Structure formats: C-alpha cells, structure tokens
View 1 (cartoon, rainbow, N blue to C red):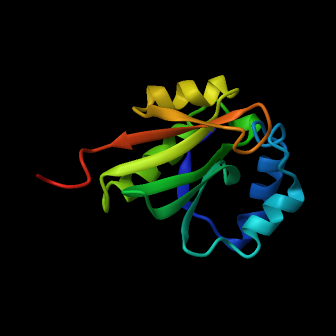
View 2 (cartoon, rainbow, N blue to C red):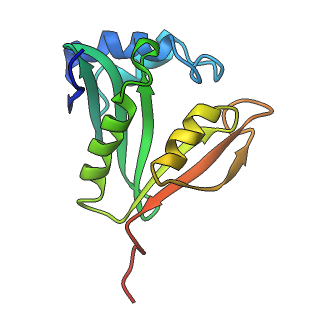
Length: 157
C-alpha cells in the first residue's frame, strides 16, 4: 500500500466519493443517502475547496472546505472509506486542509456528531477544541458539536 496522495477533487472522483459517504457512518445514522450525496457533488461543489485522498490510485477519503465561516473557514465534510480507516487518510486530508486554511485565516471550524466517539477523538488528537453542542441540529435526540482549531485570535490587538 502506498502513502496517501491528496489532490483537488475531479469530476471523475464523484462516483467513488458518493459511494464511500453513502456506505459510511456517521452519515447513515444521520440519514444521508446516495441521492443526497449526488445532489451535493453533481456538479462538483462551487465556492468550496474539495480534496480527495487516494491510496493506490483509489479514492479513499474526501474533504470539503467552506471559506469565510465565522472568523475563519469551515471543514464542512471529512469522510474516509471504511476500508481505508486507520491508515492515515484522515490525518493526511486534515493536514492538507490545515495548510490551505491557515495560509489565509487563523481559525478552522468543524462539527462532529455527539455519538461519533471515534471522530471526536480524532479531532481532539489533532488539536481541535470542542466549543459546544447544537442539540437536535441534524436528527432528533443528537447534537452536533462545534469544534475549533486556531493559530491565534482573528484580530491583533
């Protein structure tokens, strides 16, 4: 197995991205289907930076960044195929996201489902701080937790 390769998402990646997200948690628990992912990724999202992580030439993960969220950027989506977990794809994608984001702003925000202990541990390990829950945000009885990683205050005093 080769080291992960991160690059901008291309139209030919769409089918693999849709499939990996449709087959993955937490998206299934949150009620997302292939139809939802096709709506998001066809055509490729405009006004967002879309990255894919490849292993041996196969799409293994995806990241979607929305610029200008609060006083920073927002990691709208970070997904890794079930077969590619625990081999560094998520970390490689997140590192690429951080290089891009922290080149233009001081704050990176993300959300994680309260029931997704693995993702919460991943973000914590990578320097994100849990800011607070948004109860019943996507599905009843569950909260999305706002996260922040920073290189310092948005403004200098």
